[in-house]
Structures are given as structure tokens and as C-alpha cells.
Length: 470
Image (tube, rainbow, N blue to C red; front, side, top):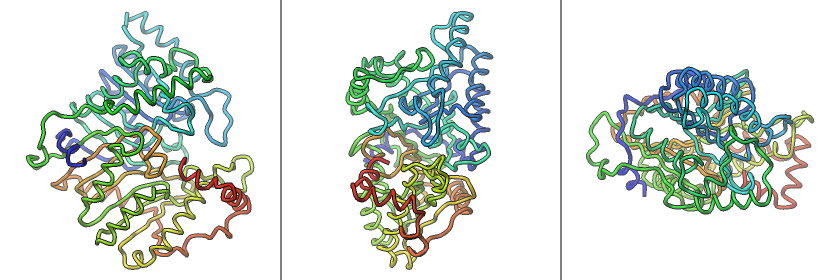
């Protein structure tokens, strides 16, 4: 499957690809691309938060359409996430209501003044299932005219580096054909105004046109229908190049990039990950915030390791996990904040089981931690020849229930190797290398609140359920 996808991808000049390193660079680039966009802006992310950074980005989008009313701005977010507050926080006004409050009148005004056929700024809530627990819209990537900014980051204070930051990965690609494929896939399948799919017209919520309402039984059924008939439809996929056999004829200076959409078991992203791991000849580098791999993935990685392939995993220390909260802070700590400890116990078990391979240097594990900041980097690097750039996790949830996407990069001339190595070194500067399971706390050493939560979770098998759903 990997070879087929590569041969159907888009040939892109490596000189048109660059990587950002820091969240503050991400926000600065966002603002620059918004300001310079002439025709179209597409934003895919889990959420656009009503906080200082989110307000800066929304104000920039509003300023852009005021200066250029012909500019088409479309933002696609998870519907359920937009209608609730962040975990552990109370919020009087949901993000969805904020979008309507800020944009409804502006859109009406610009449509009237300039005789426009569409609202300049549309923000859509995409339901991946009847309830957030059973699936979210986790598709990532932004398009500004012919430039793609691909990242697993959403838009809020943490991701944009306001006070504290959340470390992610950021790829910038300038290519018209790839940008068209990226843009058209989202608009044609998920925009109620442009899609020919009846389920999309019914289920997708135009937050900027209609005040968001709590979903009832009827709406939840519509969300299920949207998942079954649109998201799970095998025909819903990025348009790929018709030209075949590109890999054999690729000339120096170019790479091949293939956009892929995936949802459900055995989807193209999952298959591509396993194919890429099978194709490794020397080493595999994995970026992941959570050590919660599927059993099949763990088995495959260990199999390849025993065949001589070096495995490097760069993950989050529990304190740098985005679910983490201080157990001593009663105002913010909830049961969900025990998840980083659950992941850490899984990591400790993995290290203990594979101590010999770690001692031999065949497996390297690095835990990222930097003061009060957090870590959210994802993706795979196979021999610096294949890259999977994605916002998807490597857990049961991402592999089975969330709507995900990825960019598969084939780089046989190692044109991106220097940038990839520089990015990895940037991540490693805040990492602690784990050479023994004894470097990780035992459950008995956890704070009392955490121990209590984990004991109850194990008693009712909630720990196993949590590993499947988070």
C-alpha cells in the first residue's frame, strides 16, 4: 500500500519545504500567512480557543477579509470540542458561541456591501460521532493560497507559546497541486455549502451562521449517519496524481508527498505506518506525546528491532503531558489528569520487558520535559527516506475511531535529512534519556490522589477502557 500511495503522490521541490521549530514561530508564521493570503485560507484543527492567542488569530482573519472581501476563509473544527470548555475549566461562553458572536454580523455586512456569493469567514463544526468520546475530527493542516502549513497543533495559548508553550512539529510546503488536493478534499466533503453529500448538509454545523444548540436525539442520529456514510465512505479520500511510477523516475531535487485520510480499522494511514516500519533498513524514529501504542504496533516495532533496526522514541514526560495537572491542586485536578501516570506505568513495563535491547542500544527512549511547558509532537521518520507527518497518535483511539490525516513523504535523495536531524536535536535538548525502567517511579510512589484513582480504575477495568479511548 505504501508504494502505491507514493506513486500516486505529488512531486514537490525539496527547496519548497521547510520546518519550524518553536510554537512562537508557529504563531508568527500563521499571522504572516493570513496577512499575505490573496484568495483562500483553509484551517483544519481540533479547536480554535477563545483565549489571548485564539483571539489574535481570529482578529487577523477578520482584518484580512475586511481588507480583501474576496478572500475565502474556511475553518473546520471538531463540533463537540467547540461546544464545551477545556477539561478542568469552566467557561461561560463556548467557543462555538464566540465564533457566532464575532463573525455573524461581519459576514452579513461584507456580503451586503460587496454583493458576495458566500460569507467571507465560515467556521464549521464537524461531528465525527454522536458523542466526543467515540470520535473527534482530528484532521490537521492549513492552506494559504498555495502554501500548506501542516502541524498537529491547534490554536490556543499553549500551542502559540503565550506564557507557557506546547511543543509540536510544523512543516511548510509550497506547492499548488498539493495545496489544491488538500483544500478541495476538505471543502468538497465537509462544507455544507459546497458538498453534494446530503449527510454533510444536515450534520455539519455552520457556527458563524447559526447559534450552536445542544444536540438532541435527532442530531445525534444525523452525526452517526455522517460518520457512516461520509467519513467511513472509502470514496472519501484526497485526490491524487494520475501519473504513475513516479518513485522510479524521481529526479534529484524533488520528493514525493502524498496526502492520506484515515478513519477506522485498517485505514490507509494505519497501513502506511506498518508498511513504512517494514521498509526500514537502519532506524525508526517516533515522535509521540503518549506511550499508549497499540499491541500490534508494539509487536511490530520489537520484531523489527530484533531484526537489527534501531528504534528511537521521543515522548512526553508525564509532567509535560497535555493531560497533566498537579494532583495537589484541588481546583484543577480531575480523574482524567491521572492519564499521564497510566501512560507512564505502561512505559515502565515496556522498558522493564525490553531492558536487554535498551542496554544494547537497540532501543532508545527519550522523555521530553521543559519547566511548565508541554509536548505534543507526533510522526515517524524511517531511515530519513520515508516520513509520516501527522497529527495522529499511535494509540487505539487514533487507529480506530478518530478522523485523521497524514502526509507521506518519500525522499530517496535525503534532501530533508539535514532539516529532520536539526529538528530532532532541537527536541532532544529538553529530553532525558531513559536507560532503565528504574528511572521511572513505581505506582506506590505516586501522590495519594493518583494512586486512589488508578486503584479504582483497575478495580473496575476502567484503566483498560481508558487506554482504548484516550
